[in-house]
Length: 244
Image (cartoon, rainbow, N blue to C red; front, top):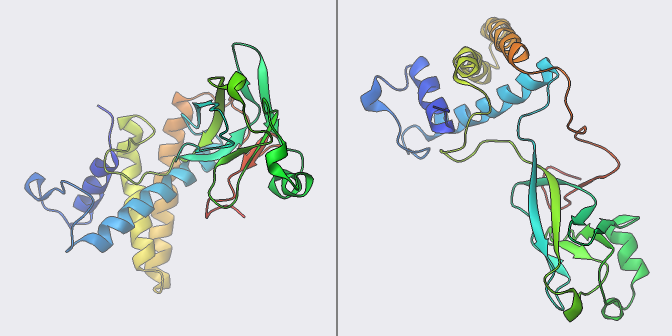
């Protein structure tokens, strides 16, 4: 059975003696008495997983996802998936072979090119992420003949875990091997001002991370058919606070 973020936090806090036995396990990621440690454990798991895949030089699993954008008459802007980080243009209407490409020059260029936006109508050919709200903004306003045209949107999604039910992105063996690394990551955060303790935890962290990375590399191929995270056809979401 796949492990969840709640499992990960519970197992980590047990190792740190903040939870004693199964009876003391958290049932959610909200607990007023232990909230600081819960938040630190969540952050440490996310950071350690990123370090794990960086060390392994492997592609994150399930990094790409798809969604459908369906044109609606007179509607020019469309909400994007909440976990989207990059759009992989073009969007494709697989029935007719229509595409929506990234607008050359982005939002600012479209704003300058279309001084009277309402004059641009018909089936859209280009799109851009609107900075004000993170919506997909099309170069043309769909008309009744365009209503219902469905486009497949391929995108890179955020892999950071935040909800209790979010699944840890690898099997239970690697999960178990990674727990000691997360524990040391937390100790490093707590002992940041103590050079000696920090150095000890940092060494243990690298060792534990290396063991987990070796297991991961044995179970996943080194090569990947997925594109790199940053490329010419990957448009960042300007509304994302991590971008810009």
